[in-house]
Image (cartoon, rainbow, N blue to C red):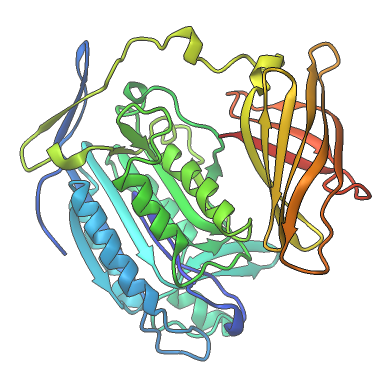
Length: 433
């Protein structure tokens, strides 16, 4: 298994039985940039630095499998961040003493500059340990003993609380931590919505975290997360509002959607900010077209900083118009991770596509929302599908009737509904595509 980073970016994985484990520098260009809109300069960064850490050659192979995929990942991520205008420091296969000291040295050198963008990226094993009912996540150096040897293990690994300390200690305005891993004991508050306009984010401080999976999930050594990270930044695929920037929140939500769907809900990235009101107002910023960023300050213009036309504004929740469009969500049911895609038409017609590792099917029918009772309804019949497992039964119909709860920012809604005709109600959360 492996893990992700910060901006600090870190990649890593956590303790699983051995059979379940999959994975647990360059000095160039200054990364200086000025962001302008019609009013003039609205933000400025003088430097951009990333520390890339790869742990693959584990010495205690009875507890921690070697991770050959990490070497490929850190090379690919190095190239990606050079393209983004970052000064790259890359270190591989560090023992417990050197791993912590390299992170500290990097931060001491660069992260006291308030106008620097800072990333720490870690790839390697990680672990979750239950400490008297309190689950804590750790990154695991190559010389770590088994987690069952609790005393020695805890003296060797780096806990997530240490990243919280680093996040608060340093003064760079934007710092991101990414972990390509499954882990628990998070020090951040999860997010589920896209950020406001970019010019309200670049001047506010933030300590941001992205992980490639949650506790007890398996993150494969062949990293889907890293592949989607490249696509998100190199092709601007995560730029949800097409403003020429990819925020840390946009990146995390894009990775959640892509990786979770690709892995049929078995791996679910998380994004969030440090639970500190002084360090959660901003958002880490990447540039969709970073080629103009060089050793001297580049100028990046915010396109069309005027308010959007009303036709582009998301309709208010608690109206029928709010629901029109495409929504996706996933649930775990009877040992299977099922993905649901809803296409709700303005004419009251709808389609529901359900897929998992055993089957895929399409249902079509009608939907409605009553603004007085706040009841959401879908009635749809199967139009056919394909089963990859002879034991899998396709769903004949959907008959959902539920009260709706909404996100404050209109990014998702929740209902209680049956995933199967004879099943019990479960909570569905649908995100706008």
